[in-house]
Length: 202
Image (cartoon, rainbow, N blue to C red; front, side, top):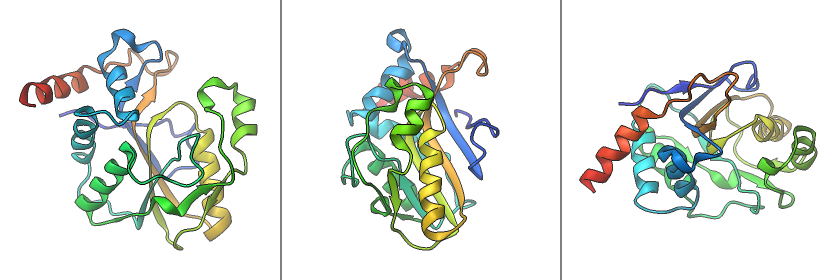
């Protein structure tokens, strides 16, 4: 069983807690897990279902947020209904008895993919774009597939707080972009073993 990893508390200080499963290597043509993360982003099977199976295994009745949300894609203004993140959100909600409410988050316009932008450009591109129109709750779980910076999470937290006041926001992502300064070797061996076993059984 793979171990759940904790996001840097200083970098993600807007969160109650943040967790990820694997490391995403940008030049990942030789990294199996990085390729599998991209296949999840594209909604390909059986990889999407395998990631959902792995991710839901980390959840139990010990944590039950009021609602579960997901980050919107750059081209989305309102969430579409059948992305790989939607499948993950529904599966987690069903397992822990929570509510998956992706429509609570919208954007006022499409945005450029942040991965191609510099730090100050990311902030300018995303700042003020998100809106929260969901229930007044205290505990929210936010889902994403791959995270590189805290820019989008900061913006989503701003939108939520502007609408309903302070909340306890937790983040769960499948992959964190590898940072050679802080992430050691960025080892994905445990995740590779999971997928090797899953493919052998498929």
